[in-house]
Image (cartoon, rainbow, N blue to C red; front, side):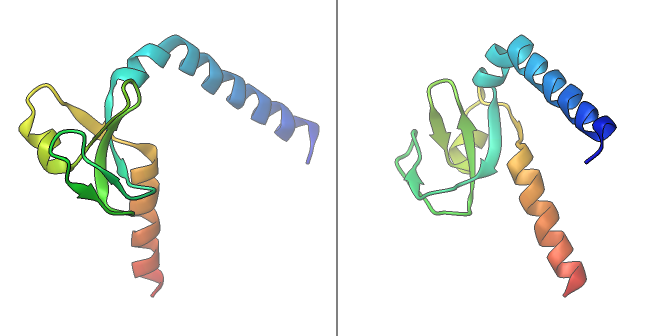
Length: 98
């Protein structure tokens, strides 16, 4: 690995860390649509969330909601999480290759 590629990697990592410091509070209070890693329960209705299904998550709390409860609550405005996007891209690539 060359000096330039290591330097670019360091700059990118520093920029990401700076954004997390500046916007950490806002990011912690946002709701994100993401994939369930381990089976858990919805904080609102108590329904079971199976692994690899969709859920809405907020780090500040922490709050885990099923998509149905999140859609019903007018105060919850969620966005796609990076993990959800990566999973969807992986599934699409698998379909195209297969």
